[in-house]
Length: 438
Picture 1: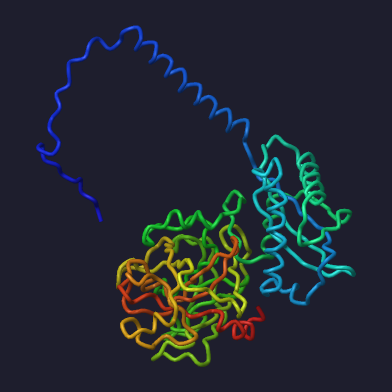
Picture 2: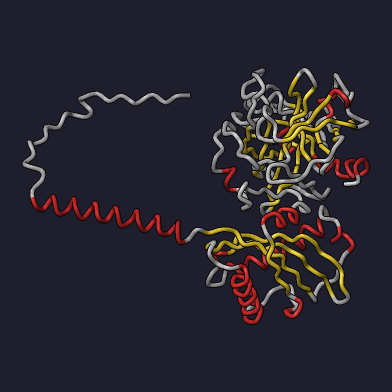
């Protein structure tokens, strides 16, 4: 909606008669003007010099070390397990405390645990550390700074995990190697310049779901298309071959040879295109009630993970999100009820709504089952819509993204007291594992 200028009458704002000015360029004014110009030029030179001299770039290192005061658990080998996630977050928080408290704390960007493995007296940790330094710096000099910072911090601070200092190794890696290592972790978003994309970057650009997504912002989003008929549904990449989507997307056609999947922020042209080789619809999907509205599609050829194509994390079945948790829905669907498909990927921030609220007589009157999740706003205005079906509802947990819902159904789009209804992914975690091994 366009906002028209607000009108005021002359009575409200009476005309002011200004006195005629004397000659502007008297000596005092000329001196002040000259000083102002000099100051502006000085500031401009300072800014340019800052960005030229401080031409920062990301320096990445593979860190490995032993933690001696915890025991290895079998589930540490599963990156999707709650145990791996919780322990990784604890280690990453510890690294953040170590490096953000140091004198060069602003140089620390992020850390990601890549692997936890057993050893006799504890756990081996492998992780990526990212720092921002002037491009003129050497990797060896920065490595020494990082090591010195770590040793000093371990000496003077108490941490919940005991790091064996002699075991600490820091190896410089280039951005390609870093990306390959991070590909072993799901739910990580990176910019095209190989810098982490924080969750706040998405929140700041949302205006009722009308802002389009940037490259690499939602790299697990796929478009499922019928050959000859175009985009039908969204889907989410959960491995290099498997897509998670909604069962109702395949009501009319379950023949995998008729389907393709594309990736990227536009349908045309796509970043990547793949054929579908297998479709698995939940055995107990009921069209009339929308129960068990979940399906899987397997690609004939795997995709290579990159900054623009990446898998989302599957949540542990025990994950619970309280009402009013901030989540994001993305898709190529229409922006008004029964409108056309959008060529460019769009996104919206919504909030989870408790099942008790969603099942009220004035909302969905008991239609929400345990396998469903409501999200949106009770006043409407922001919602998924036609063509978004099968797409992801994702939740950010310390810049690791989890798919918590699949766009399933709703009454019209963005109506008051008619929020979007999503398939609750945690309810189907075991089903997904039984079909895919993920």
